[in-house]
Structures are given as C-alpha cells and as structure tokens.
Image (cartoon, rainbow, N blue to C red; front, side):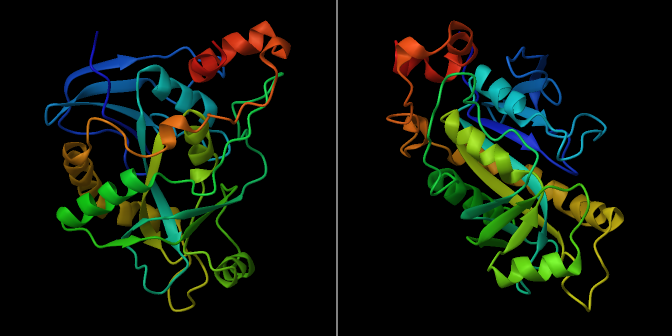
Length: 288
C-alpha cells in the first residue's frame, strides 16, 4: 500500500508546480463531480509524500468561477490527502498588510454568488459546522514555516472571497474595509467549506500582491502587478511548503477529521442509492 500524502497543495496564480519533487507520477482521478482542474501530481519532497493540483489548470485557463472546486477536493481526498494547503493571491484591505507579505487568515466571508458550495445534494443532507473554517493546527504550522524561511507573515484576519474574475470597484473595496475584512481573494470559498465536508484540514497561504483599489496612493490592481509580486513570492512559497511538511505530525490532533459526526440528518434508508454511491468516499464510515 502506497504511503498517504502528508500534504495536498492547491496552487493558485503563480504557483503551477512544486520543484524538487522526486518519484513523480500524475494521476487523473475520476470523480462523480466531473473533471478536476488538472491531474493530481504525486511525488516525494524531503522524504515525504505530497500531492499537488493546479487550481486554474495548466496554463491558467480556468477563471475563479469556472474552477470545479468539488472535483478538485474530491480528487485530493481520493488519493489519500488529509491536509490541504491553498496557495492564493490576494489583495490587502489593511495598510499594514503590504504587497509581498503573507497572511494566514483566521476567518472567511463568502461573497460569491455562482458556485457549488457543498458535496451534499441529491437526497442526502449534511449540515457541517464551519464556525472556524480554517484548521488551527495546520494554520499555525504554516505561519511558523513562512517565518522560518524568511517571509513576513500576519496571522489572523478575515479573508473575503468575491466572485470575480473582475477586480473590485473602489466602492466595493471600501465597503469591505468598513466591514472589517483584512484581505480579498477569489478562490478560498468554497474550497474551505468543501475541505471541511471532506474532513480535511485546510489552511491558506495568502500572498498579498496589491492594495486592491482602495489605496489612493497606489496604482489600481492589474494582472501585471499581481504576477510581478507573485514571481517574487514563488520561491518563498516553495520553501515554506518544504519546511511545513517536516513540521506536520503523523496524526491529526484537530477536529477536522470528525467534521461529519452528527452532521448527516437524512435517514439512511431514504438516501437514493446513486447518491449513496456518489458520496461513499465521504460518508460510508457514518452510514455503514
């Protein structure tokens, strides 16, 4: 039996692969939710098994609204991933979170409109708690790793996910600031919620690329500005990932792996057979 990956990495804008992987193999995972953005890349880094998936596909051809988040998380779950690290570009909504910094957010606000947010449909209802949507243990380890490799890291704050793919208007940006949001991105929702439903730990390495558009002394955000900043941070992300996998304990001590306990409300006898089969990877241990 092959070893379980100690970490699954979802790479966003600017991070499309992990250098230094050994014994690399690609796996196209069949999921009941369709095709993942890209094949799952499995390999060994510093003696540890890891998995990588390019969120926007190879060549970055999927917009944030087009990403099949359910297929991506299901594919990682299917290859044995229990911990997921999201690497994401984000805009700062606070003066002290400067471009080039990394934020490990503690809270999430979903302001998207057109995405599938749950695995549970088709006759099986699950109400999962996401009061604290990020794994505290994985987030703490991530922050330690970013600092250990020389990055400037901020811990905590709320990340707001907008639909995209356009950037915010000034009115929207200033509204989010008035709400107390810290950083803004386009992909963390529904990833965090789906990871919780799949009982996987989830944390975000949010790379600040710009001040969104609220900061009048800075130029408005552009793709060119985002990519230039990300190129500077790509090496930092890779070094932090390599450090993080050496910090992860073999066993999880958080509650993420028990997220579905008490969450499934549907009478098992009422679940349609096709739905039971579709969600078997997630729910079988609770319905057996």
